[in-house]
Length: 232
Image 1 (cartoon, rainbow, N blue to C red):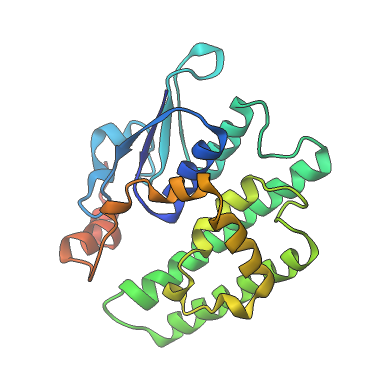
Image 2: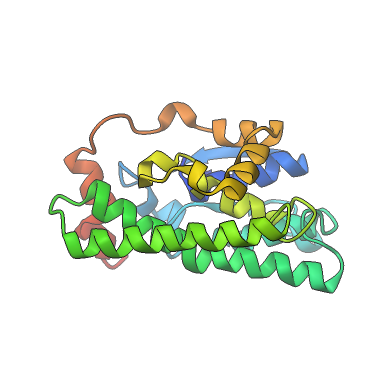
């Protein structure tokens, strides 16, 4: 059984979706990042970076427990645990998949996250920062649009971990003032993935815990304030 320490964010959803697609049994350990639960010692024992998601697989390599953090590492692990599912077996396909997974980790995740912070969460609205990350979000959508005009899925003809890792960040485009209809190939890809039953189950995990309304002072402090930088 795999323990998933997580919260309903795009990074958490990646792992939920992968587990559902692979049919692996798992249990959820909620980590309420708005309440600062990511700083608890039991979570820091799994991930020194105090970021969700993280997993404990009690039946890891050689039958020994293994802990992992960083969503891309977790997805690669889950693929290998199931005999390489959702990552192409041929070398060219495998590296195409890994390439687009790293594109999400190095580009889409950080840039979309910075946009969300400065445009939606920051108390002080800084035009320079908002403009910079608005432009970067738009540019990254253009990169996806070009790729998806050439292939059905990010790694090629088959659905893969590259799609799973990217899809949660493309959901809810209104949060980034993006019209998916401006990117017809991205929209086709998004809608195809959103219709998958395993994806629907994955994004439903902890859905009732998603924050509604304005961010509280406690949530702001735990997610963006000095609590982030305390030595632990």
